[in-house]
Length: 232
Ligand code: DC
Image (tube, rainbow, N blue to C red):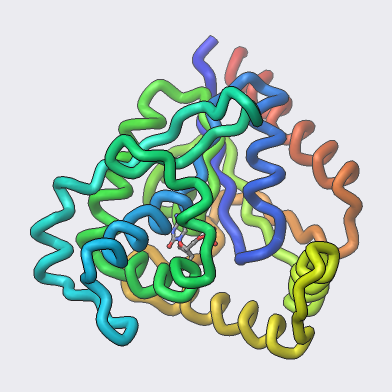
């Protein structure tokens, strides 16, 4: 039985990574967070001083792209995958506000997308993978056996982020978060190369009114159906 490829795309802040990671564990598949890869390239650019006033030095970054090695390893303590940049663990460094603020511009550069897409296709060559991102079902694995497009109402996503920040004791304005969610939706869906869109053959999962358990049960059911069908 050939393990299948599962592509999970969708809007930001709707729990894609959590559900993709959970599904991979259930199936014994590899999980790849492609957002982390774009974040790692952004960290590389920041560390090399290739971003001035938010604008990337595209000539220098393109020249240096062959040196940007992004990979994943297992953190033996947390048992979670961790992002590596040129052999260094950068899992925490790629989640900072500074990286979040610059990643959209870096992820929109065609030569960055080409390099990351190539690496992602190599990682998924053998199947047995759950990959989450924005363009997995449309550009990276257009032939994935299962594609899911995840969304939720912007207000629901903003509320979830607001609650998360509050739980961490951080100050947050709901209006500001909502604006940020809507802005990221717009940038992700309107860039020229591989914009965020639902693939024609992707299943739509709107989790606005679902509990995590309901959502996970639905997801596992879809994966099981496809795996069973591929066995026949
Ligand atoms: O999922 P995330 O928020 O960590 O993603 C970070 C950024 O990378 C976000 O601006 C969208 C972009 N991205 C992308 O363009 N293509 C992907 N396959 C994954 C993420």
